[in-house]
Structures are given as structure tokens and as C-alpha cells.
Image (cartoon, rainbow, N blue to C red; front, top):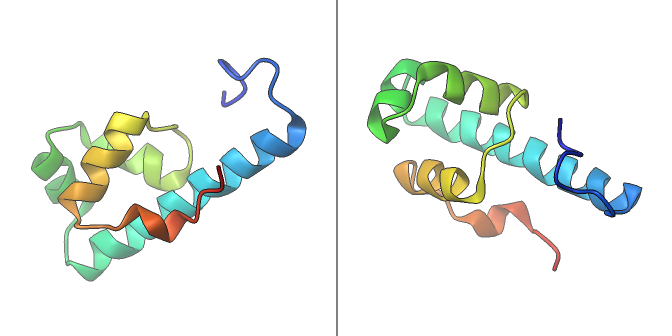
Length: 86
């Protein structure tokens, strides 16, 4: 669950994090599909289990920052698309 590790974060902050992660999931899936990659092929490209890709794209798993960077680099994604506010 997202709230684990975010003790003390405001409800608004948690909502913003969820929105950003959902946006990343959508951008990731769209880019992968535009490149003609299956989830299996993409998982192989980034050396992760296909379920990791599936769950991240479905918003069922929260990727760590290193994993987000790894996935984004593999698809040549610009993370500025997320418009994360400091």
C-alpha cells in the first residue's frame, strides 16, 4: 500500500503522489505500445519479471525511483512529462 513509508504525509501529498504514479503508469504503457513492444519484450529489455511491468502499468505496484528511472531510460522517456511539483 502506498501509505507505507509515508507516515506523516498529508492526505493531499498522498493524493498527488498517487496522481503522479498513475500518470507514469499510463505514459509508460502508451510509450511501450507505440514502440511495438509487448510487456514480455519490455520486461526482458529491462531485465525484470513480466509481472513487474504488468503491475506497474496497472497501478497495482509502486515502482521505486531507481526502477522508474530504469523503465524510463529503456523507453527513452523524459520524466519531465510527469510534471512533478517540488
